[in-house]
Length: 322
Image (tube, rainbow, N blue to C red; front, side):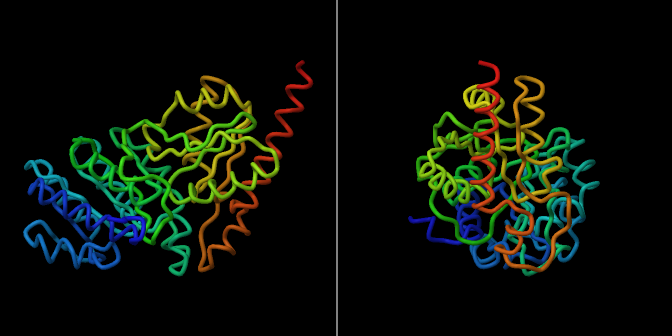
């Protein structure tokens, strides 16, 4: 099946349906947003005993999910990203992470992809707050095939997990043979001038940027971190040693998310010049993607400019040290 021709939320629902057939202990929990996450017409229709709509009560959804996990079930609890993370942070802390319960939390429409819903629904800090949670893994797949691989891994693991789910259709980056493992990055391009690291929704844009950078004579080492926690420290350190300069990109506040994770790794292991692109510590607003990219300066032209500038700075450093 050509999953890349489907919306990501449809791929989520279809894959979850397959997993329920394989393991009836898997449960789909929704907080009155099953149509938005794609599960209403698939899970509710085909597996009604495995579908629970708790209503507009996200905290209750997490509590029910934790209870189900204690009884040996594998709950997937989905809602819009702000409702799946910051609204229920205390319930996740105590009932899921502190108790180390096998609950899978899915935050849909991450970052600027929540566009028309505005600032209240643009959660720019979910990677940050969930990454800071002990016992919690944090994933952000970039396309339909990585999403399927991630869900299959989540269904078999016993790890409390938070996953960002992009809702619209995404271009094909991987294929049916892609595998997912926590703490393992995907090296999408190999280069020597600058390291470019992205996750989730922004990876398709970094691929576009790499094409433009190659035309400008900039050789890019492109790393996609589908697993933000744990993060692939070895891949990041090895690339930074090779290039001497790193640019990170995410549809998140640059404080606490992917960029911060990369800074933490390199500051402790191989101090490197880093430029973080994303939301500069601001709230969202009702706006088009183009407008938000331009306002916050992390679209393709800004990625290209940051990489060119990073190459120039690292080249000067090497020249001065030679």
